[in-house]
Image 1 (cartoon, rainbow, N blue to C red):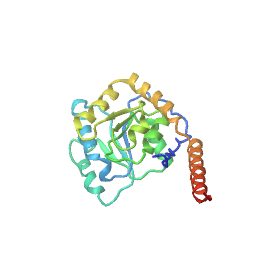
Image 2: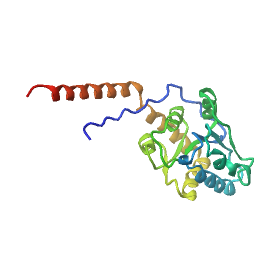
Image 3: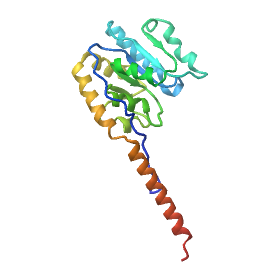
Image 4: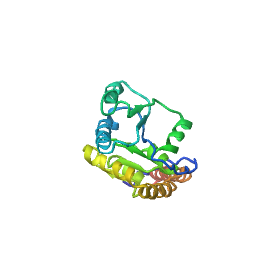
Length: 210
């Protein structure tokens, strides 16, 4: 354990958005692959639109892989057809435009090495609903909503709550911005340099004559 140093990525330097007046799309950003657990998101969103016909659209942005066609198939039929869409890979400028309008970012991943989309959303002032798996709890802390990613009803509940409560969206946006400020590339660089110095010192001591 004393040999392990965690150098967390830094949050983007982009400014906080102006909070939208209307309830914008529910946004997912990430590669369309099995570990992203999009099936549970699709089922959760189907629950949301069943109970709330005026719910905003679900928008997915991210590159595809071999398994993506099967994962995205539910978007071609009811209740998701016409309400959820996949934009494909988008560059940083388009991603920022999506974050400007989004009501929230949703990340139902079963595994996540870090969660840059969550950090980027928090820095922009977008509420985040994410699974309690992988590194996502470490990224969100208390600034977002963490839920069980295997039960669609459980995942749908915080989405519905955020859609219905603008005060909660604002509070989570503020908490996310503050949380994102804790992640800096300067701090990451200091941690990495410190780790190298420690490793070099251990090596020097191991080679020193006894």
